[in-house]
Image (cartoon, rainbow, N blue to C red; front, side, top):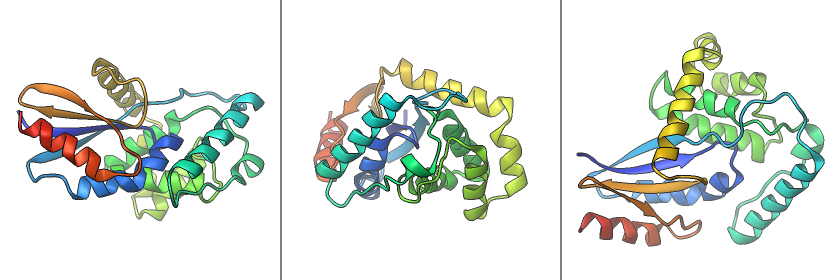
Length: 207
């Protein structure tokens, strides 16, 4: 069985955005034998309803907390006045799957594009129009992306990944798991110290 670091995330999860830089550092320093596998967790299902005001306030407080906790991480709060927020992350998750269909490298590239759009450019990744614009910006085949984005198979792939994450006991994002020698062990997410996670992983590989 291959040794894997399994990453479960949602492109519109603010804590995943907070973790993004440290995650990239972690991945770039992993031992050679560790393969990275990414799954989408599907934080919030589809809805056309505006996000309730109380939830908007709660998320803005979360953004502020992340800024205080993680050095150098900033959010563009204009999102809350420039856009009509919806509690729907499934469209962004499907966009990652649709991008991945044109090459595995686009899984992380689309995730990063969604995060930049949402958290820095005050754009709304709950809207397919925004996601198609991002795909075009990445140089993807725009028409192919648009077709896959709304395909039933893409929604089923997302549901399958959510089910896989739940079967592994994941109920929050971001989450990391080390699969090694038939065992599946959680890796404690450290938002500011990749070395702490590397030590956990190296310890798990020695068992």
